[in-house]
Amino acid sequence: MAYCSSSDWLAMKKPAKNSRKGDNGRLLIIAGNEKYHGSAVLALLAATRFCDLAYFHSTVENAKIASSFLKKIKFSTPCVICGKSGELARHIKIADAILIGPGIGRGKKARANVGRVVAANKFCILDADALHLVTPKQLHAKCLITPHEGEFKALFGIAGTEANVKKMAKKYGCVILKKGPVDIIASPHACKFNRTHNAGMTKGGTGDVLAGLCAALVSAGNPLFASACAAAYLNGFAGNLLLRRLHYHFNAEDLALSLAEAAAKIEKK
Image (cartoon, rainbow, N blue to C red; front, side):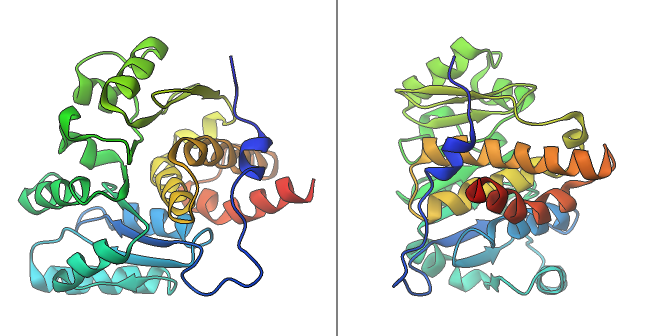
């Protein structure tokens, strides 16, 4: 068995000394609704430290509520470009990668946006609600999906065993990061496992953090499978640092804000 390690993180691209703003990842995140604004915030907090530019759209359908929702996002982090509905097509076009799913709900607008993203021939990371709004036949070689056991079974109709994760990755040509006590990460040609996490990470929102991190790494020019392995390891490594400092008393926001410190510790070693 091959397990994720610090080597997976160290293999991630680093910004070139002469690079300019945008060269190291333009990420579009479509997340959150009026009930689940936290999912969007957590994904953004994780992502903005590992890519140059983050564009944000929600699936809130009511214009008045959408305006209030965007204010919450802007208040939560200034490191994001909040887009209006009329700008979505342009942001899809300029994005190097797109994350869709955390907290979007399962309404008509959310379903339409998932279909639009998957059909855009862009690198896309599908998480949470998006996994209930896509069909296996829509998946392709530029898709990374991040299901837990229930989401995997809902999408493919089978249990998320090692054999089945490998089989579905090969059948649909995508990369799967199946979350669990031991994460199973599979592409059509490779498979790794990640056991770097702890019981404090069962709290709500840690999956949103992982999805945001995965998406940022992909947007920065890293391959899907390598990004999934590196993100799973770093997410768990950060969680273990928090465990030493706070025991089990940390939450998903603490995790998102600890990722950069965790990455620096690995890189200094």
